[in-house]
Length: 187
Image (cartoon, rainbow, N blue to C red; front, side):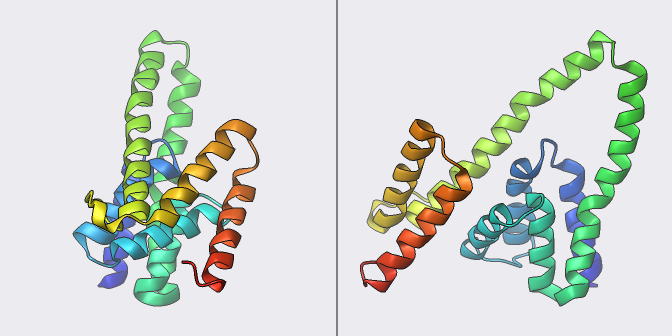
């Protein structure tokens, strides 16, 4: 039964995560934390971090991670298949429609109207993750501010905006700095 639940949950995520992996993050959070309680908010933040760092699409990495946590390798397979199945079908249909009707202004209008919704989904996911890092939850409680997390966020944001290095390098540097601070007993 859990394999079917994993498949159907990630089937929904695969169906409605228009815009790619970042747009899938709030949907994965809803299914895994809010609806089913398979993960805590902290575990979900770890999932998002791991899915971002590992090669491959975030949604598929997230599905595989959740499935593995919940039901082992069969769970990973069920969740991953649920996540990719809608894409296989939808991309095939959309490719056919686009090739046939790509010059129609109505199609171009529909595609341009989806962009703001995708940006809103990505912004929502980013804000939820930021609040989780800085406050330990999505509630704004100044007494629970993680100063190290806030400082790392600001430093990473400034470095990324000003110098435009590889995001992977910035993530690795933040991880190494946190490890060093932990070893020194500061964090």
